[in-house]
Structure formats: structure tokens, C-alpha cells
Amino acid sequence: MQANTAWAAPATFLIAFLESFPVISIVVPSTALLLAMGALIGSGIVDPWPVLLACAIGGILGDAVGYALARAFGPYAVRRRLPRSCWRAYAWSVAVFRRWGWWAVFVGRFIGPMRAVTPLAAGVTGMRNLPFHTANILSALVWAPLVLMPGTVGGWVAQRLGTQPSAAMLATLVGVAVLLWVGHSRMRPLLSAATARSRNCG
Image (cartoon, rainbow, N blue to C red; front, side, top):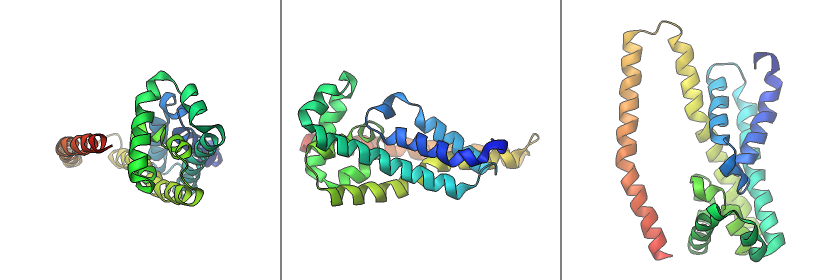
């Protein structure tokens, strides 16, 4: 990677595009690859700004292409070509989208199952171009740094630890990990309840 850093941004663009492209994002381990790219940023191997920009643009275009295809082919063709494993997520995304519109597109990028089908739902329900693309662009600008951040932090920490980390550094890392785990454990029931309420309202 140090000898080929010029390819970091194009590779990130392709990964982010596949991560945001409908259905394909389910079978491509894009999130893991983006975390690895973030680790390269944190280690100082690649320049962060071109990679960050490429990640945002790839996410924007991935959703935009899915939306355009859904509008072009229509709801029947989209449903007929979806894998069976995507049917439930697609139906739920359409219901959420019809209720929340712009916010469904924005928030859908951050929810794994919805991210794969939200552009399709927007297209088949006839969402207008301007609202879709504003939500698409703004969500990608927030999503790109967030998806790269964990890997970046991990790469930075690994570089600081070196081969002989101090006991204080290890204790700090363990403490941070425990706090994150506790926060996640407390937030997960709240998110699940909110998701259930959205389904019931739809």
C-alpha cells in the first residue's frame, strides 16, 4: 500500500459504490474493506482527504444509480428481480419511505438492511429527484467519515502502541472498549423499540 498509495482513493470509491449499490451491498464485504482503509489512514500510510472524498462520492453515486434504475424499470420489475432474502427488507423500506420520505432516504444509509434497498424504494414510490438527491448527498457526507472512523482510530492506536505497549495504554483501551460496549447494550433495546414502533405505524 505504501508503494501504491495513489490507488487508495479509487479503491475506496469502488468499495463505497458497491456498499451503496442496491442488493450488491449485501454480498460484498464492503464495510470490512472500508474499516481496513480507515486503518491505513490512522496508520499514516494514506492521505485521509482523497480517501474521504472518494468514499462520499462512491456512496452518492451508488444510491443515485439504484434510484435511477428503479425509476426506469418500475416497481414490478424491481420486485421480480430482487432476491427472496431482500423481499422483507424491501417491503419494510417502502412502508417506512412512504411514511417518512426524505428522512427515510437519509437515515436508511446508516441501517444495514435498509441501505441495500432504500434507493429502490425511493425510485418505485416516485420520489422526486431534488428531495432524493439532497438526502442522498447529505447522508453520504455524514456516512463517509463515520464508516472510516473506527478503522482510523484503530490504526492510530495500533501505531501508538507499537510492539511493546505500556500497561496504562492497554488499561485505557480496555476501559474505552467497556464503555462502548455498555453504551451499545443500553442503546440497542431503544433502537429495537423505535424500529418496532415504525413498523406498527406503517
